[in-house]
Structure formats: structure tokens, C-alpha cells
Length: 567
Image (cartoon, rainbow, N blue to C red; front, side):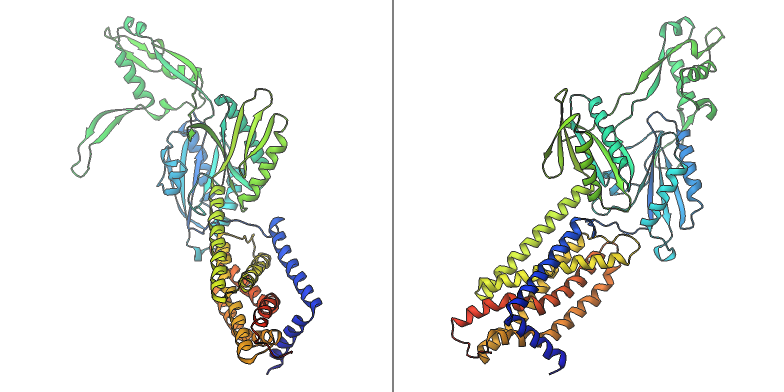
């Protein structure tokens, strides 16, 4: 017998014989378990259930306020392109004005497929292959987002950097839906207050309120009486306005290779359509330059035949579950949305308490009642947070089912509730190793290493791995008691000494295999969970399992009269 093996057997036997040592081990065990949970609660080990995958491309959504022209949109996109064209990691870019680019499932969920107009643009950016660049797509977006916001902030634009979704696509990482109230204006006012609270939170970007900002527009109203007096037709005036400002189809070009006829558009030159500073005076000047020839051969300026009226735009009505809604959204920038959500939720309860009575509605949602008017609002969290909560619920249920099934399987196998409970308890204690492994790995990574949904999958896998270790020790100890009539203390000590090496070899095999996953952005949590959990399981097998199983074995075999050896 080697010195190390003898030491393990002697130590375990002394541990079971000395109540003080057992108490110290239990206290140490609970201290480690409690401290590991505390690391997550206070945020030293951070949680982000849906890690972002690496990609070779990303998109940029450019949104200007309603009413802005395509020329102002091009001014913003040109600034963006000038910044990005100097980036070595970018291979090429495609720009789409007034319409969506190639839309994937994520773009459809965000509603980009249906956005059209002169005030929007989409830029698709392709990066070098991952092995040809030193910077990941996640870090590239983080860096470029700051640069673009500093250099291309003009015309009240909103520039959104859109990466591959961390999980199922959603509108944004953080979505706060505002419903209730008696009018759109009241909901819009509350949404702006919430948007201000969002902007105060660090590590949030791409803020937006999913509603239309009211803007001034100008309507050209035809004066049919003046048109008739001038010897013109109403249709003539309409056509010249379309030709001047929009263009109209006048013919088709037939092409044998085309599926449909190709329309030919007639329009005036670009300068005639461009109004640099939208105003009544600018529009009237443009109309004065347009002339029509009447039946008498006289030219009549269009400005004499129409009236320019100033109007306010009407906002789109967005509804969900038959309730009108305005959503405040933001993206997290190198941070988990869980912590930002909790901070913003606390800010809402602090800053809006003067005007509203604030109550809880469910786990995270808030119900607001305005003190003066009595109007009620519901603030519902959606977006990536909802997917994260669904993930926690599903994986938590899976973990609970796994524990219950293993417990009842052990009850059937051992015909003993105490031993079955000991196996499950030993398996659960070792999850502290998962949390400490994430803490250690985070110290050696340049960015935060989160506990993710795949880490929870590692929790579930560890329940089975740890149960197997306990099974090996219990079965061998029972065999020694039955066949050698050993006292449980000696049987457990020999069982652990004998099984320590095979269990260690299994642990090392799992660790070496899991190292391949440790650096992956998505499955890294699973790899680290398996590494830390199996190491903790090995320690639990040596020091915690013997204490937990000793009394159940002693009670079980003392009643059967199979124990003859005193030591």
C-alpha cells in the first residue's frame, strides 16, 4: 500500500471517529457553499444566460426622425462608411437606402423587413474570417459603436449595431413595454421619462423609443377654382407635381430576358426635388419655378394654383394583446442584461415615486398609478430578458426533475431513503465548484466570463457524475460489510482509499475533454462547469460522502447483525 493511499484511509477513518473533525468539515462545506452563492448574488461571478456567438458580419441600422429626406440619410451613412472603410478587419460593405437589406429571421422579429422610407438605411458589414483577425466580432462592435456615435451624430439619428442574436431573435436585449393610460400622449410622455432612466445606466447603447416622433409636414392642396380659371386641367397639375417631386411611369421597356416589363420613369433633375431645409418658403419657391402651358399658350406658375398647408404628422398605433403600447428598448454593451434591468427597475421605483404609486406585477413587472389623475400603466419587461427567464425556468425544471428521478432511483436501488438522500445531497454540494471555477477562469480572461445557460446544463450533467462517485463508494463499502463483516467506519475508509484512484482517472478524463469547450463563447460555460464541478465532486467524494453515508450504513447493518468487527 502506497503512502498516499494509506494516508487517505487513515484520514477518513479518523474523520468518522472524531465528532469534532466531522463538525469542522460540515462547517467548512457550508461556508464554501454559502460563499459560492454569495459570489453570484453580489455580482462577483456574473450571470448572462444567453452568450453572444462569434460571427463574420454584423448589420448597422440607421434611423432618422420621420420627415427627414434621403439626402440627410445619405449624409449619415456616408459618415459611417468613411469611418468603417479604414478598418482593416472589414472586407466589404453593402448599403441599402429606404428599404431593408437581406433580412434574416432576427431582422423580421425586429420589424426591419417592413420599415421603408427616406429616413432609414441599412448597412451590411462583412469581416475577415475569425482566424485572419485578432479581434472578435463582439469586441469589434463594442469598439466601433463608440467611434460611430462620436463622429456621426447628426440629424438626430439613431445608429444601431445589430449582431447575431444570443438565442432566439428578439426586438432588443432590454425591452420595456408601456401600456395603459388614457391617451397616446400620456404614454409617450412616460416612455420618454423611462428612456432618460435607460440612458443614465452605463454599458447600455442603441437606445430607442418604438413610436413615431411627431413632425411638421406640408400638404399641397389644389385650388380647383383657380385651375379652371387659368385654363388648365386638374390632372395636368397633379402630373407635374408627381414628375417634379416623385417621378411617374410613362412607358415600359420590353426585354425578352426579363420576367416583367421594365418601367421607364420620367422625373425632373435631382436639384428640383431636393429641399435642403424643409420649410413653407422653400417649397413655395420650388413650386414657383414649375410652369404649365394653358390652352391660350400662356405659362402659369404652379404656385398660383395650389396652397401649401402646414400639418402635424399622425403617429402609428402599435398594439400587443389588444392593448396600445409604446416600447422603450436598449442593447447591452459587454454586459448581462439582468444587472441593467435590475438597476433600471430600481431607478424607476426611486425617480417616479413622486408622481406615481408603484406596485409590483409579477416577478419583475411594475404597475404605476398616477397620483393626480388616477391613470394606471403597466411596465412589462420583454426582449432577451424574457428568453432568459424562460431558459432559467426550463433548465431549473430539468434540474429538479433530474434530482427527483435520481433520488427515487436510489431509493429503489438501496431500499433506503437516508442513503438516497445522502447521494443527492453530496451531488448538490459539489455545484459550488462550478461557481468557483467561473471565478478563477474570469481572472484570466480579458473580458467578463459569465455563468451562462450552458453552465446550467453542466449543473444537470454533474448530478449524474457526482451520483456515480457516491455509488462506487457505497456499493464497495456495503460489499465489505456483508462479506468481511467490517465495521462501517473501516469499510467506508477502505472503499474510499480503493476507489480514489479510479474516480480520479475519470475526473481527469472529463477535465481534459472539457478543456476543448472552455474557450468557446457559447459552450465555454459548459466546459468550465464540468471542470470545476468534477474537481469539487472528487473532493466531496473523499471528505463529505463518508460523513453523509456513515450513519445510514451503520443503522442499516446494525439491525441485520452483519457487523462483528469493532474497529
